[in-house]
Image 1 (cartoon, rainbow, N blue to C red):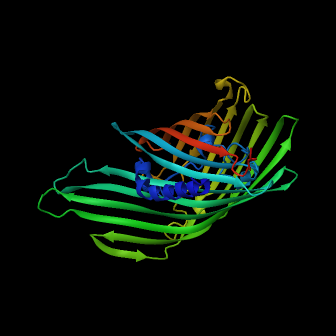
Image 2 (image 1 turned 180 degrees about the horizontal axis):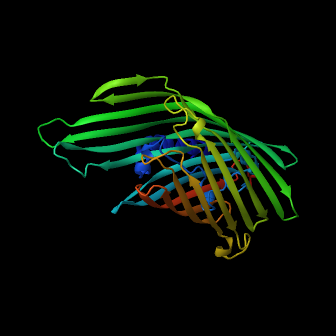
Image 3 (image 1 turned 135 degrees about the horizontal axis):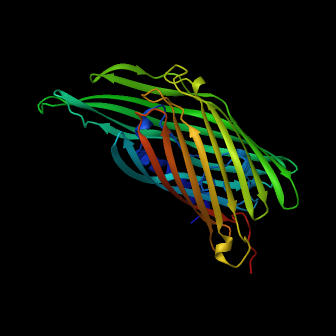
Length: 408
């Protein structure tokens, strides 16, 4: 089968399947706030390194986070990466314990070179997840309320990266089309079986274009060592949204032009690379959610920061022993939330990651496995405690797509 057709088919299937399976990718009651739980945009190969990406630059690692990195792809190769995840969560709500497990497609990305200095990346990635169900346990004489939510936001993107100066300075641009829905529903069930069940659904359907600018600078330290600094900037971008809000099963407010924004954000990171042996780095990101409009007002959400750090070690890249060619990864992250919960407090999340890059027989393609454990820490003693375990597996296909074989 033609490789171009296969890649396009898989990408189209990814977008289609996510529209039906997105609700299965979230667990937490806290996804009812804002746009839901923000997704990790790093592919599985970088998730195992704590999610670092801004300064990661390699011809064998597909980096969709910093668009400047796509110029590093080898001029004769084509890369395709598809990731799946399985996630389990444990909750403790003032002594009441529960657990859930979900899974499904996480992302699809492809990357190729147009020339020695110009690379292109195309893909699909989630931005946020919404999915929860709670309430209904405490029944009164009249009845009880329960709450559920579903949806999430995703985007299809294109990255353009170009080496503009002596293989040291690269510039990239990422353009993306965002789409998605969030649906929140309150259901009142009366105690009398003959009475009607009442429902108050609120929905938001959003679409919009966004873009980011990326930069990477490589500083040689020796023949085998280099330091790469990466920057990513995303301006505040408005998007169109249709909202419907109900009360007592009657439409009370409907709008096709409610103002919403995605926030302005800044990212900076670095990696230290020792040729074919070690990559180590850290990232810092700051998102100005407090300045972004949410249902037409600002200061509804809260500014957010995230710190990532990690490393990758290869014992013997060109050796004969299989375990020596495996890429061993370790990392961690810390972030605070962009929303304020019903108790008036923010939450902090801390996590650790380990991963493997398992080379295939061609030594160019990899199976990437990333394990993550994270803990959501709330400042309010009344808030729910959450613990997550996530497994992400991807296959990075790397082939000499444009190489013309000589006839024998």
